[in-house]
Length: 187
Length: 309
Image (cartoon, rainbow over all chains, first blue to last red; front, side, top):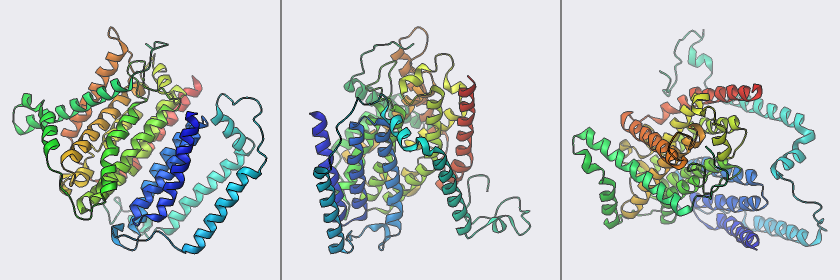
């Protein structure tokens, strides 16, 4: 019973704060409405006893939204995002897409023949979930992870306007790099 | 000494203890300040109480164009984050809740402080507040990864994310001895997490108080109390993670937990008064070039130790 109440509160809260993202007229409020929506979505994971995943979602979403708020407000049309601005683009189109998606998903809830539970939940659902997702694909996941990491390093290296020759001189013989911003390691 | 079936710590006891520790930190800070400026240190013990009374009757200052909702939310979030993080910190052998993922929970709740300080700074519609809020985020990005690796290294040493298991794993040797680099990184990031000196740039005097520039009256009281609570809770967590929890001779477990917490808290408060404020553009490079590789190496050493044991 308590679980149902918590789930209902979270479900309504997630939808309401998700809608609030587009109603409020400030970048900061939109960001934190979105964060609230994510946190409401994390609590049902805890209800499923996936405590690691649930807490991790809370942790990652808070950090992620705080990084996002920096960039969103930094790059908005008005400095620091302090002026009111509309959060909506292509109002009619997005409303239609959202309504259709919601209708399809809601219809799915009633139309799909959901299987009944067989057996009892495992002792450590997080491990079971991880093995179900990753088990036979671990090698692929590791390779993809390495490729992603290499891509990130390569794109940073390629996009940075200052390379090692700028920092250490044409013969790379400068003992202290010449940086426009002083660092914390004796420069 | 881990008793098996201790009844869980009551929430009220925890909050009272957290409040007492926060007051102790504030009073200790006031005493250090009084000694530095040459006024009576004994009178400084009651300084936080007098300051609280003053703030409670002070009239709230208003700022034109402030986002009052987010501003108030930011202030209120700080003590709430500290209290939520404290739920998994054991006192002796009992915690309010010894979650199976206690370490992750602790980290998730202390990261809420990022939101709190940024909201405080942004909501005030003040340039100094905004500068302070952004400084705290930059600081967070500089210490959070080493901080996480320090937490993970302690969990790795015990093979569990449950705080109780981490305490139990230190029966023979404290993790502070086994993984000194992780302990050091934890203490540094604990100071930064509570934006206590030398990491007090987010509320620095050079920015007229930064994120704390505009709040006044009760708002300011909540902000300051939340900050000291945060400092108390990160100090308290160092004890189960690295200092063997409630283990010790003669005294019962809860007393040892408190003694060790007070020792760590005292060290943190003292450090904040001794070390000058670090500039964030300088600390960022230290965080990424020194602390992060250091904490990774420490995690590697501990994982090898765990494997060969």
